[in-house]
Image (spheres, rainbow, N blue to C red):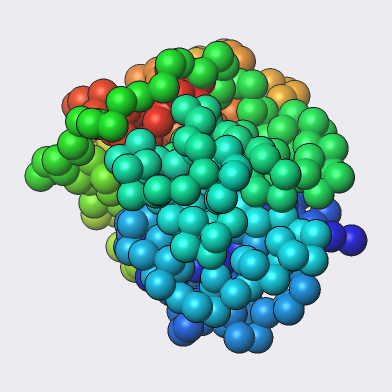
Length: 384
């Protein structure tokens, strides 16, 4: 079994880090989510994660070290001698070193981009003065793998699996990658439109149950918060909730606050979906929301079966995971990346949080064009 370290530092890109760990674990890689210092780390979008260990406690001879992005985190990695030493030691031992978004700055600091091709987030490229920049979403050059930006994380993560000798095809197929990402657009220039969060009146609640799908959930929360929405993660029991891939995420508020929100979002993850379906209070909430004008129900992957259990899907167009048509009786099942009909907003599988989050935002009246550009969604081949 291959082993990997995914490093976290304050301000890290939550959607990148958790998706990378998720994909690697799906591929059978033994992953340590390691914090640079304190095990409890808060990312750039305000999501707090409990790491498996600190960098000091992590494996000393990993097959792969991955640095997710986030400007603050990238600066911390770049200026950490311990991180640079780990990167150099891993590369010298024949391992793989990988970074995405702004984090290739640390690879440059460690001297690992010399005579190498690399990519990096467009606004950061002028800060790297070694190696050769390649305007591609993902660049693999020997033991160095780099990714361009947030929405590239899926293609980047699959490239990591392939580099470790794990066939990524079954993983990307199970995640329904092709449902959300098609042909990438042309590279973006250095200047990207700013995303200025507006004051939004509508609030979204993501329900966290044990076994929820970490990457997709946090990506939806991240994107909606970037647009200025209040998007809180509500826990059913204890504030720290463990996801399907054993990543521990801190919820924001208890489930008892759910009726204060305008949208309830049900994440995927089969264990999480089952726990939501088996909770009578959750089903009662969904029925109440369904009966109220101006309220919306959003779900993806296994979360769509919770809507079916609550009896709120009859006659409505929706989508869900492959083969879920029979699990959503009475609904009109479509295979689109994301579907909106009346008060339901649904998407398909683990690789479709972007279409879902963008659809939720647009239904609530937000313009998502600048966010799409900042996240490099067109360059990732984003659908919808």
